[in-house]
Length: 386
Ligand SMILES: *Cc1c(COP(=O)(O)O)cnc(C)c1O
Image (cartoon, rainbow, N blue to C red; front, side):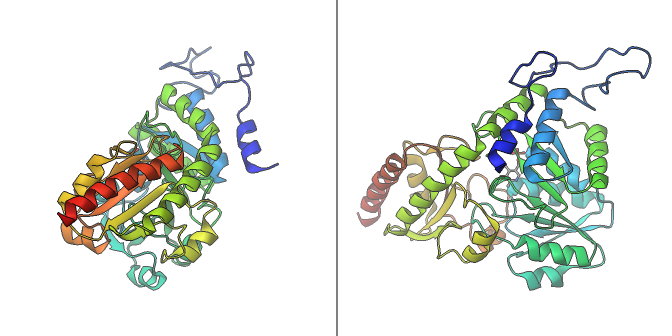
């Protein structure tokens, strides 16, 4: 059976009523027959049947043993970090999501966990940066917003040789485009807020583990720390996942066309999209990804925040907002929005200049989206030449 059919039919009708849609169990507790005698559910922080359907579904999607749903992507990341203890070190991708940077640097360092950031697209640098303290390698691939691709298989081999856990933030790819556990990672996290939910209508996070042991540890942390996803939002994520195959295909097709259009624009200096042969990691991307995804970033010829601000404020279909992965197209200026908390030099090092613009390409007709961008480039060109 092909994957998409397998996913859709792994969601079984409700045993009690035959309801084809997963029931929403909006409850905090469950009535017991006798003290400690119950149907496997005692308190809804520990277990909820709606959340369980989502957790099993994402485990199936990622080909892992266990899935767990959290109140946000950052809560999911936080649960993985809680596998560590004081004195441990994390080796993380340098081009990391701003919120993960803030969590690692400003919360976990305080508890004695150190962080080292490296360019994980260069395998030698990963190998060299490992110390005896390194207990976790943290990858994001593709990264935000310059879409760098790290070779998961090669890094997993290094991690294994040193008995270090490898966790991949798979948010930008989604499980249909990339399966890190199959490539050797131990854990996968998602901000389900993005492609999995897919409609810009909730905040959620997921963790999937490759082994039963790690699954049990994350389950313990989920219950002990308590940042669980509620039943209604769990249901919405399930519903989102049901159309992920169709959405992802269209997001990727539109993004590829927009990336190729951007290459032809005189105002544009550089286009970041893993589906372009000019992308420095295009070969690994082709090997590792089934889809190149819906995110396209580009840098303007003139590194000027004012012009970039004008561009991102002038589109009409691309709406100015943080976040990504929804059905409607979004545009953002990372230096002022998603990447504001990253120190300027570090930001420039990873290519996030004052004129770098990120698009989350939605499901509109691509001709309309290209039209929207064309109009704005015309306006900006006039402004620059006057
Ligand atoms: C959005 C995002 C997160 C954080 O997820 P939230 O759901 O906003 O908490 C983590 N990693 C990546 C790559 C993201 O894009």
